[in-house]
Image 1 (spheres, one colour):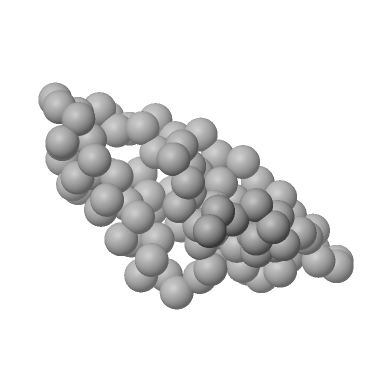
Image 2 (tube, one colour; image 1 turned 30 degrees about the vertical axis):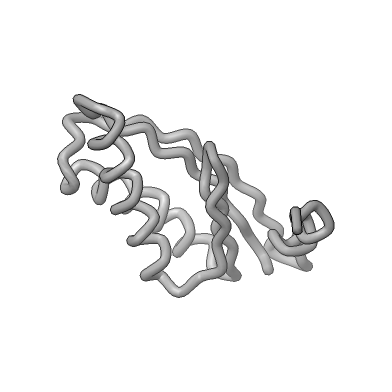
Length: 100
């Protein structure tokens, strides 16, 4: 892997149920990209070799939230990019911490 992003999408919503439904739409979009991802309680991490694709996905997550009903959306994004070489993968970072 050459890059990974962690994105926390915070849509405005009138209720917790609406907020969850909007975030579920964003996660469904991320799943549809076919890239390896991990959903955590605060953010979703996505990894791939194409930095520009990951940036486009981060941007589209906000559009998805708006189309799903959010009046506004905030997003916090962390990026790791290494054009030459490899980065630590999601699996390498978290597998040893998985609960049985």
